[in-house]
Amino acid sequence: VETIDLNYFHLTSIETLYINCSKCLFEKIIFSKLCNLKTLSLNLTEIKSSFVIKSNLKGLKKLEELVIVFDFNDSDGDYFEIPSHFFDDLERLTFLKIEVKKMIIVNRKWFSKLSNLKSLDLSGNDIIRVTKKMFKHLKNLTSLSLRKNRIYKLKDGVFSHLENLENLDISQNDKLRELKPQVFSGLDKLINLDMKYLNYQFQLDIDLFQNLPSLKRVRLDERFKELESVLYENYESKIKFDFNSI
Image (cartoon, rainbow, N blue to C red; front, top):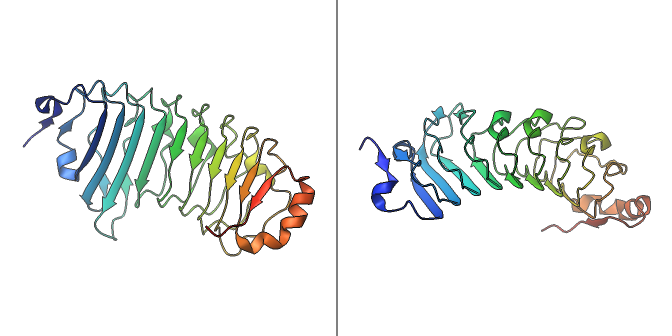
């Protein structure tokens, strides 16, 4: 089979599609006829090392929700790559989830056309570095999850472009040893912050949340419960600190 034209399967009018297939089969699919698709979930299996996507999502101009989960079947692969302009046609996209165990670096060009994106979920990857330029075009983003990655450092003002962000999850980054108050600069609308299970050497600065005027809830490890009274006094009980283990 050279290509799989989904038009032949009378799918051109559908709005929701879930695809679970191998990498080889995915490369043969033509998405351009799915002009009414609003929700797409791609679960690719049998992926080996040094995987580079050659296909694209061109034509899906009405797509609003996209989930990409890639399952590698080996542990020795050296890299994974999604083309810079893979998401360019998805200007209506409001929700994007990318989960790839081999993904170490996020290409900032992926999001250059996604100005309507509201929620970005990058949890469960191997991301080691996050940059300010990565979020430059995501002015309308309200929810960002970087949970369960390998981020080892977050620079001051790294989230400053996310002026409408309300929910931020950086939990389970067990390489992250330090956070300074300036890292959250610009997040004036942030309401919920999850930072449980960072590196075991992480020390909590009680002034960490001073640049977050709208913050209402923070999730922390149980080991910081001894600071509970100090934290409540410092923030005049305006922030709820959740030390639950779940």
